Structures are given as C-alpha cells and as structure tokens.
Length: 102
Image (cartoon, rainbow, N blue to C red; front, top):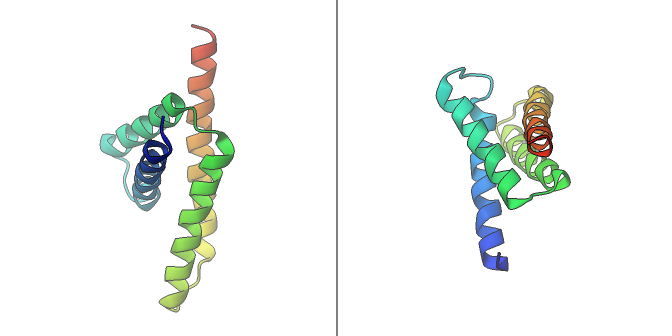
C-alpha cells in the first residue's frame, strides 16, 4: 500500500469510526452493527495496529470535546464513549482469535 493509499484508508476509517461514535448510544439497528463489522474487517484486512485505533478514538473524542467547550457544554459525557472503544477492540480480538483457529 502506498503512503497516499494508507492516508486515504486512515481518513476513511476515521470517518467510519466517527459515524459509529455518534450513533453508538442512540441506535441499536442492524445498520450500525453492519457498520461496526465493516470497520473491524477493514482494520483487520489493512493490518492496522491497535495503538492506531486508540489514536483515532482519542483524536475524535478530542474534536468532540473542543466542540462541546465551544458550545459551553460539559465534555464529561464523553467518558462514556470509552465503551465504544472497548467494544471495537473486543470485536477485533474476536476476529483475530477466529483467524488463528481456522
């Protein structure tokens, strides 16, 4: 993968993850589950390391925090979004586990 392709992939993953974060606590439909599965499969296929996933999470949470502060609102609720990260990493671990035993 070229550097440009890698950057484009990371931008797309960040966009997908932002969508997941925004909808994680408000939507329980199959579309969100499919989005999470697609995100996990993309990360797995591209061999994205876990620290990079955490960086993406922190970058987006930081952006959300700045926006909330600009609006004069507390960013305390963003702590709950750690659950999303844990869920994503758990799905990724399961995918790794399944790939090892196939």
